[in-house]
Length: 141
Image 1 (cartoon, rainbow, N blue to C red):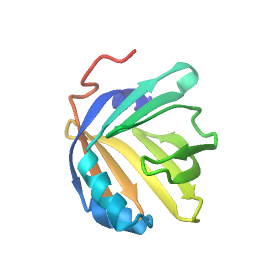
Image 2: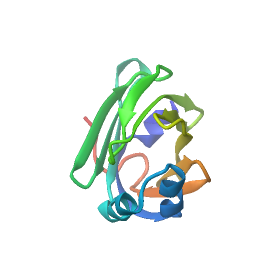
Image 3: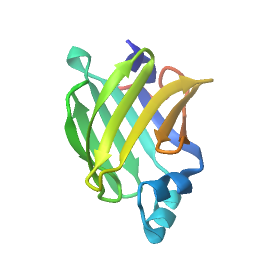
Image 4: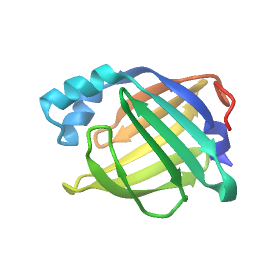
C-alpha cells in the first residue's frame, strides 16, 4: 500500500511558490503573510480498512481527520476556508481533490521523493516540501 510509505511525522523544511499558490486560492495579503510564517507539520497514520488519519499542524491550528479513502468529506484549512473533496490512493501517492466554497478546484498530491515527503498543491503547480526519513521520522501509533 502506498500510504504505508507515507506514514510518519513530517516537519516543513521549505516551500516553493507558496505565495503564488495562496493567491490562486483567493487568500488575502494579510492571511498569506501569516500562513507563510507559521511553518507546520504533517502526521500520516494508516488505520484499519486501508483508511488514513492525517494530522496537520499550522501554528496554533491543528486539524485531525480520520479519512475514508475515496469517500467525500468536508474539511477546513488553517485559514478557515472550507472545501469538499476526497482523498484516494493512486500507486505510491495519496491524492486529495477538493473544491472550495468559492468554487475553486485544487489537488494535493503527496509522495516520497529522495527521502522527502513532497506535497504538491496544484492550482498552478506549487509545492511544499516536508522532511523526514523514509518510511517515517517518528514511530506512529
